[in-house]
Amino acid sequence: MIRNRDALARTPTHGVALDAIEAGIEAAHPETVVTETVSLSGDTLSIADERYDLDSFERVLVLGGGKPAGAVAAALEAVLGERIDGGAVVTATPVETNRVTVHEGTHPLPSEANVRATSDVLDRARRADEDTLVLAVITGGASALLSAPAEGVTIEDLCAVTDGLLDAGATIAELNAVRKHLSRLKGGQLARELAPAMTVGVVFSDVVGNPLAVVASGPTAPDSSTYAEAVAVLDRYDIDPPAAVCERLGAGTAGDRPETPDPDSAVFDGVDNHVLADGQTAVDAAAAVCADAGYEPVVLSTRVEGEAREAGRRQAAIARECLVTDDPVAPPVGLLSGGETTVTVTGDGDGGPNQEFALAAGCNLDETAGRVVVGSVDTDGVDGASEAAGALVEETVGGQAAREALADNDSETFLRGQDRLIETGPTGTNVNDLRVLLVGE
Image (cartoon, rainbow, N blue to C red; front, side, top):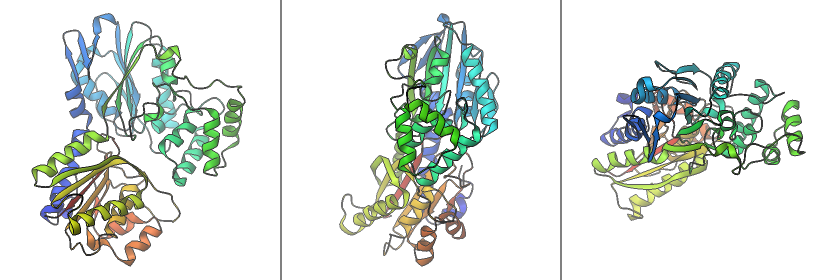
């Protein structure tokens, strides 16, 4: 899975960190997850703890999107086979399927290709009726990949707003509050199109805490956000949106446009959503590898958010405390965490949150003498806009040049020069960040 593993595995400790990262990604892969959580026995489809009688439906469709959506569709085909009557998903990583159409789109910014593919999903959704069971594939990345701009809003408008909020370091919840109100699909609106079909959400969460209204902008989940909140987000980050965005959000705030379906809406009467994988899935698998290698696993949190470099500094400080005082745990220990950090871009360099996390941690491992190894990746294999998944570092990456790179948001350039980038390519899953800090030998 890690293409440059040989170059990165400098010591046995580095090797264990890479093993843990690979195990975390593999545990969250759709093939693994669907095999463990979805089964078919006769006419009974089991998803997590729920049962669905396929004899009650005339058609079974697979519809949705996100970075791992193609792999999820393929895994569902492997379980249901000819019981699937068709469908369509939009993904950044296409895979071969037999019964579900897989459209390739772009991420993190939407494109006309995304809009055309999403139109196919919406057309099929509108044809669903009370005799249809829809397996709605809802995964991280669908906020961009499932793009259906609201009337009067162009794809260029969406890109401008998305790009501005990403650069400003907006949280995923803030970003999605805006995107929901510029879309015909997000914020429960796909559920509205699917009603009265029975909709079963097959959810792979890349959001801290798994709020269904935020994962993929909640196409099958009730939405409590409002037009006014979307305007407040843009104001908070001093974003000057295109005129069409101002017009739509202004009309919504004035009550001239309907809000997205809220928790009391009847469109959700026939909707079940199941979170089959999330950041905990990856962290637990990584922790098991650490334990097998003799490191006591300690999960710091699966909900780490905020600036990546600050999180890196804090976790490096915990690692140093373990070495110096045996507190909170005496080495050898594996410190694990998940979540989603962000980067407020002020420089001109290249990189992503996991690379900034790793580089900041490396700069704060003074006098650890190689006794701490830090690995940090985005489980989808793409760290921000970078082609790397993340990085693997130790004390030797510190120094003035590293600090200058951090100041310029240029972690990728520096880490590539040090042969510290972790390269996987798209992994076929997406449960957000996975971090492994091994302390001691």
